[in-house]
Structure formats: C-alpha cells, structure tokens
Length: 387
Image (cartoon, rainbow, N blue to C red; front, top):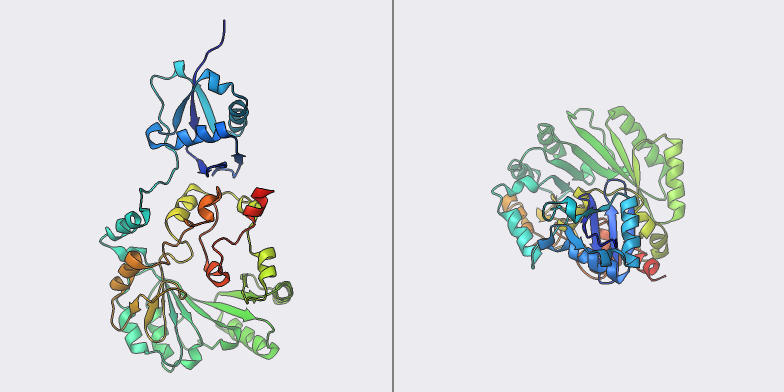
C-alpha cells in the first residue's frame, strides 16, 4: 500500500531561527550547533514556521516531505535534535510550539521605549555611573546629586584624583555605599588611599605603550601597599603592543587584565585582523536565548550606564548628545530622556547591512569601535558568505 503519511513539522523551543530572503540559520542555544540553508523549499518551510498564526508548527504533506531538499534538511535537523516531525494521526489537533522568536510590531523602537517608560521605577534600569573628574569638578554639587541615586549601582571614578582638591569627600561618601566602586586611572596616576576607608573599592588601571618604567614601578608599589583588587587594561594599537602587554603580565604575574584595542585611523589592518569578527568567531561559543533577546532590544555595552563629566554634563555614551546636567536635572529626568530620545541604550543591529544577515542577533551589540571607524558592521561575514 502506498505511503501517504502527513506530518507536523516542529522546531524545538531552544532553537533560534535567523532568516533573510535567501539564507536561513538554525542555531541551537544549548550547544551552539547550527544548520544553514539557501534552498528555496527550506526557506519557505521555515518562513511558515515563524508565522505567528502557526505557533511554530506547520503541516508537512507526504509529497512535500519527499522533496529532496526538504527531506535532506529534516534528516539533518533531526540528527542534531533541533527539529522533529510528528505523524498527524498521533496528534489530536495541531500541536503548539512556543518558539524563541522576538517580534516587536512595526515601529518597534517606539513600542519598546514606551514599555520601558511604562514602569514607574525607570531608575531600576540604571546600573552604572561613571564620574569623570578633574580640577574643575564641584565635589559638593556632585555629592548632592549622587545622594538621589538608587542603591546597588556600580560607581566608576575616572581620572586623576590627585588633581581634585577635596576628592576625599567623594570617596568618603562612596564608602558609605555597599555597591562596587572602581577607581579608573592611568598607572601613572595611582595615589595612596591608606588613610581613607576603602570598603568595596577596586582599581582599574589603564596602560598605554610605551610605558615609563619609573612610574610603572612606583604604581606597582602603591597598589601592593593598598591591597585593593586590581584589573589592568592594556591599550594596544598593534601586535607589538600585545606582545609587550603579555610580557608585563608574565613578568609581574598579573592575574586580572584585558587588552583594549585602540583605533588610530592608521591601524585599520590591525583591527581587521584582530577585532573584526568572522563567521567562526560568531559561532565559536554557545549563545543563550537570553543574550539573543538582549541583542534585539538593548545595547549591552551602554544600557543602564550614565557618564557624568566634570562640568556636570550627563551622557549615556560620550560619543552621543548630552542628556542634561546634574546641576539642573534630576537623575530621573536624565534617564527618562535617554529612554525617550537617546540613541545609546537602544542602539542595536537593526540597520544595513546587519539587518540583511542571519547572524544579526548572534553578534554583540554595536560598540564605540563602529562609531570611531565609521562602519556599522566590523566583520568579514559578507566576504565569507559570498565565497
């Protein structure tokens, strides 16, 4: 008797589907396995799966199932436990599968921001405040403003505290907070804090090459005396800088550090080789559904962060317009403006060419590098795809 079995085709709820007009990607968020296809029949099948009214399940007739491209695709996805087929006679009605498909309606930016503003406690989104200091800062006014901030915020004090006359007042105030406090400065600007309470303080030390050996050794001595946690940020412009950083890490047994590539307009080749992403880079580690959703809604680098400059100006990102001034605006007004009008917290990969790429939401949020270099996509994926 001729087999005419029909099936329900379903995609597992932990599988993310990325699609363009001519390319589809199925990505398993549990183990990082992925399948890609440019076959017209496969693209049509996945397009139907993603339609809201289908709830992640489509009817697969016997004739359609026997098509070469469909049959080969289903065999592969079943072997990788990403999709399945169910004999229709074994199901009472059409099954329902909830796909991890993030889908704001048209004009989703407005919809998204209104959802954030709907919360009566928009300050709950504020997680980190960076205070940039120099000799012109008014510490008294700054402290008055900081008193209005919610608790559990990470504070970064950025700059040379030695230039601030009454910096001890600021540190004493911050010492009353249980939240993390990071002293961010160059290795040449480390000062002794032995006479100041140091609850929850850490150092983030920036290093730019070439280093001054005398200042480096002096800073190392001060840091050892203070016994505070230290993270080194090595600003690297070339492979030679990377090598020097590795030598310092090995020589001084530095445990916590990271390399920070710095763009100078003259080192684009260094960035293309060491910063730009390849398809292999993007798929090299498992990416969770939570991360994929975050990439579709917020900028993970900027979201929740505010910068305060010595003159009181407040920014979400220093490369974007000011949100106000702490001497004239409340923290609520500053956060409210960023959510309503800002371009930092919600800067995502929703523009060309990223919006035409199946890896769009697997890539990290746009960073400042895109701004500095003047390219929306720092990757080689287009080249690889066209090969």
